[in-house]
Length: 244
Image (cartoon, rainbow, N blue to C red; front, side, top):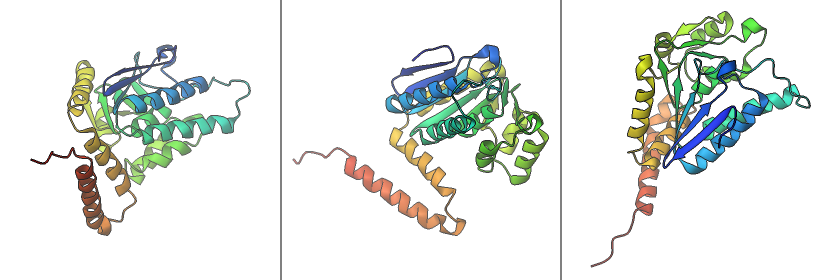
């Protein structure tokens, strides 16, 4: 799949989805959201590792505030945002975000809904919606899964830019890499994950997500049940040896 704003390529277990609107900082239009949804759906059917990256100087400057297509209501636009967020969260495999330049607003939303995010050392992050007169409800709905409430509220209300190291320190991104090594770092991790059993990768992802809603005192019992279930399912799906 290739068009003006999104490209998707797949090679065996690995897909790469590229935001390709560098002249606008890869800011999302309504049409781009629809293309993104189609690309994620296709990637989910063809691969279990998805790299999310972008062309140009910036990863994503959020939503394009100048995009007002006729016939699309504000509610329909919000519904598209919801669908896009759900599509990334529901991707059954592992999503890796490769982040360079600026990641603002909706761009941070994409990063948070990736499983692992690796940023260039010079990358910058900001939630600029409040400064623009918009309460970032979709961002805040996910933000507390990554950073503390006080850090989240500071980022939201101040609209301050933070560095890749600061984003790493508060848990917004997984790690940072020197700019020149960013692509190699992401590609190397993707290649390493491709050597793993995809069932194990998926089980780890689903279990980690489920733990968010399990009270701490119940997690040991939950772990026992989940580990036992995975072992039973693995045994049931293992090839049977022929009788001698």
